[in-house]
Length: 327
Image (tube, rainbow, N blue to C red; front, side, top):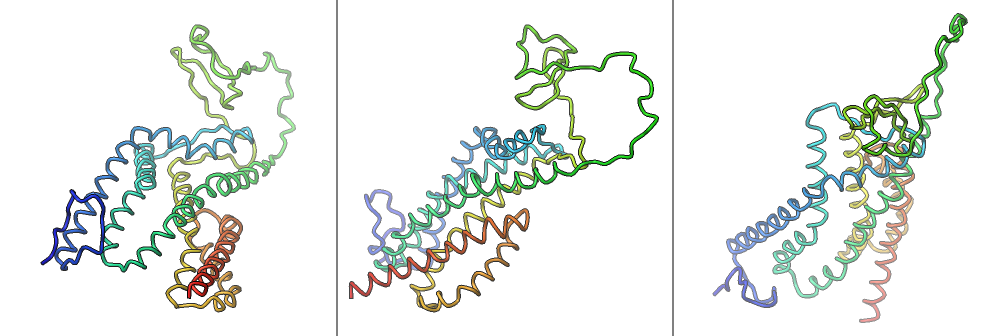
């Protein structure tokens, strides 16, 4: 006789108590997916409330670099729906990251029923490490890789001068009126001082502004160099999201190496002897999967992957020693 599929009255879940048929397994999977999606939907609704703050956090590395090189830190969009779609995308990505433990827990409740006790112990032992590596990969991108990459390319683009042929006949006559000078302010004037038509330069935001109907409006200005940046919002967010996902998944490499050794597919000695081939393969893979540029792939991803590969070998050695000592 099969036991009930879902018993919400029981205090603890014990997979050893359950022996289910295929139909019961499918029913259990359906309920676990419903619970997982329900939790994800609730978190997504909460993330929509704070979506603008999250969008600002995503753009903060770029804004910091643009301000460092005295460039107007303003992003652009070419399609009417771009800001809204970016808002939804960022909220969804944030919701998936925050609700991941709940989703994984529901899937684990389903999978655990089909595993032996020692297999469950192995999985639960390395889940904290997997989550730590996942978070570490995203933090590594946000605080190191992304700012470094943006600074490199912005500094490169701002270093290309624009050479124009000089006009000998230009400005042969003296100016009849003095040149216009905009006052330099740090921030916007107080509401009582905002006179329509007032022109000023906001040093804190590196923007030329004019007061219209009591509201500061930005006048688009750009560099006098050969290349002037006009960065599109959706393109930049796609780059950031792609890098976060790529590095977060790539940082799971130690667990992959450990799993290959524990299953018996590869021995520790074979993993050590294959270093040069693995490093070469990872360099090609990094260049293929990393969004953005080759430099990010070759410097920011390959070196961490090599270190993570060595971490996987070390974990395999530690696990092997524990097994030999227990035997």
